[in-house]
Image 1 (cartoon, one colour):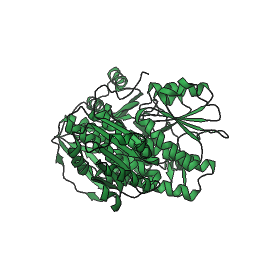
Image 2 (cartoon, rainbow, N blue to C red; image 1 turned 180 degrees about the horizontal axis):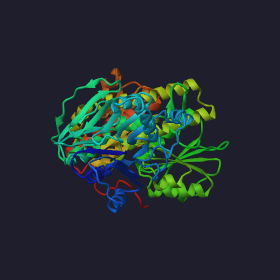
Image 3 (tube, helix red, strand yellow; image 1 turned 60 degrees about the vertical axis):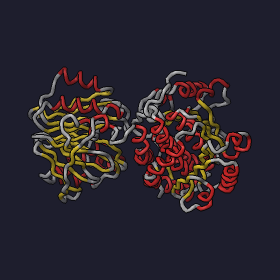
Image 4 (cartoon, rainbow, N blue to C red; image 1 turned 30 degrees about the vertical axis):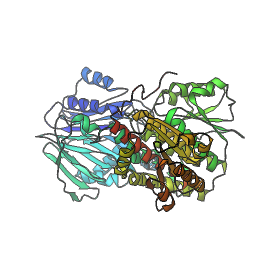
Length: 606
């Protein structure tokens, strides 16, 4: 999402900051800004829009200094605007921040009651107020920052300048990346290594809840309590391009492994297992008496909608229709003011889905969009928006944005269920507790990468594949087949497992791998029947099953085991082995994985 660059040294600081922010553009952003110590003052230049506009401001009146911080912002709290852009200033502090402060409303109320006035809608500005307050009680900026951050709950990577100290960039992190680059008589801070790699390859990684006092001569680390932290710097051996991929061969693989973080960011600040409820951005999703929910999308987002149907109907007991964006407006849909459309698009620019949104609005329907891109066309065309916060996805084949959409739909289903009264608090707590555990469990499943590679080697030459699933995992079979088609260019079909006998079973022989989703839960016995039918026809079976399941293991040729979770969150785990399998088959076949032939990341024409 957002990007941070900090510098103290002998170079023209504004040039270093702008160049570093340029290298972070791939992360996506909607505003940009810098703060530079220029003589006795700290000059802040910031704007809504792209870095070109920021560079124009700098050229018009260049700040002269060798100490500063820069930021590209992807809006979370507060719309994209100049006043919400970073850096934020209060008292002696200029500060930039990546992440989300979950208790920002409580902190803002307390600060306002103490006489603080705010200039922005952001959660970040609160950090500048807290730090300035704490500086009054100590001469040590790191100690003051530690005190301030002990009041904060959430995710952060922070860089700050303090008036009166021309040799200090103060930084800290928790659950958001931040690295210190060590040069000769100069030191850098960044949220991502590529932004500072042209200047130094000696890096010092901050750990969670650690503070760095960064000066020209180097950096001193401590924890939030002020205890010193000793850590050795290490040498980067990657190229700049490889650094953007964080050591992964392709962006697709990097983004597959980013899914625990993407899902955690989508859930963060929105669920309360204790209260058994969900807090979505903006107004409540509106649904009239006897109204329906229409889920509309294309491609992978359409598969997310199919999962959403199971979730909303199961938890909220509200009728749901799922439509392809490309078909919706051409059938004169029976949608009206009592209904709610939920439109889903990674980019927010998908032409077919946008057309469906406009058709629904014309019929008086309220539209809630689920998208990854702030201020996108779909977000602007909708009444309400739930941003997935997955961060930029560079690989054309959707991976982390798909699972982030599943997480957002699960939150929406719980909220609608609580609002309709169909979902009791205890039931909501069970689902929300399971959702909260998903990012950790995703790490667990992704550790099976080597197993997915081995399976891919065995089946790399197969030209036809079959993917089967039942219930809430049927859409995941569709998604697994789509991923394999997109990146490896082989023929793959996804089906509900119960439909196998109605045609697809004719394809089954020893040359056709059959990937079947068989976790414990509703329909498990039926899936076992399907497995035995495939086995009796010499089919090669790759199964995704629940740990400890010996029945599936006795029938399948290959088995990938996932943790046992409630059915409502199974798709967030069952899809991961299918993504890894598609990636490794494509890599072994030598296809163009990040930019598959004939495909575009954002389909902006019908």
